[in-house]
Image (cartoon, rainbow, N blue to C red; front, side, top):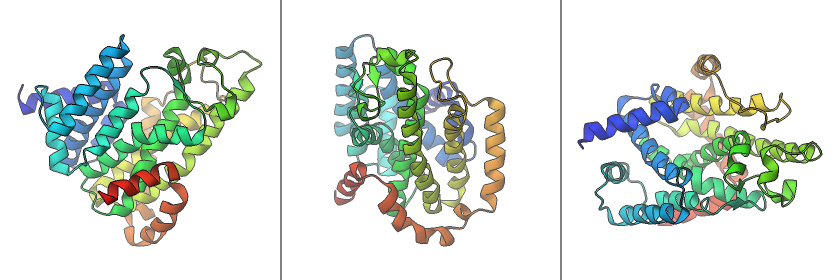
Length: 314
């Protein structure tokens, strides 16, 4: 399979499975857009290895093979080899995709999140790592941006979790912390009994509240991005955040129907974001940069700021 075909396959997968990112990708320059598409292809492959597997052992073996490829740089899978090339091209520390693989693998045998610190650790492994790799693909050179890149991944995953509680519960996964709703089995969350709904909805609201400062942190980090990448990174999280905005007015009723942002709403959010962004601080880095240090300290949870410190020490 040629490099062109590998990219075409990645582009088709992004268009089919990552429509929000596919739209935002068109706001990047060609080099960054191609890198982001290739990164999405790899992350989707890791995710699908678990989500589409009927045999946990088989999926675990497949992920072990990916870990070996990441550390050795040798594979016969053209898509994984393309990611290895991307790692070298963008100088991505191999420990970051290894954290991603380990985080996704933890879903194989069911999930029972205990408290918010555990939830944030999970979000770092599965999504914060993607934020770090995305920063590398966009040629981010300012280390101050990295905690904000992590926050972007965490915020978007928390929103996803709130939307997909029923689907995750059917797969024996409960990401809503026991500290919020008690140690209930996932089956109780698929379509909760009327008496449980206030407690569960309160837990969902807490997760949406937890996402908000991470979205704010991500917005501030836009000041550190290359100028031609800022618009795309402004748009994508606003569309995702729209899911939470729509969940709240429907009383966090996630079980009756899947909350989505329609094509019209995505277009409206995109146009509004573009209009605001053109005259807002994210496009004036000198104004925003003085806020970075305080936000790094205040909005990045200890659970993954420590991990970031370990990355920098390598």
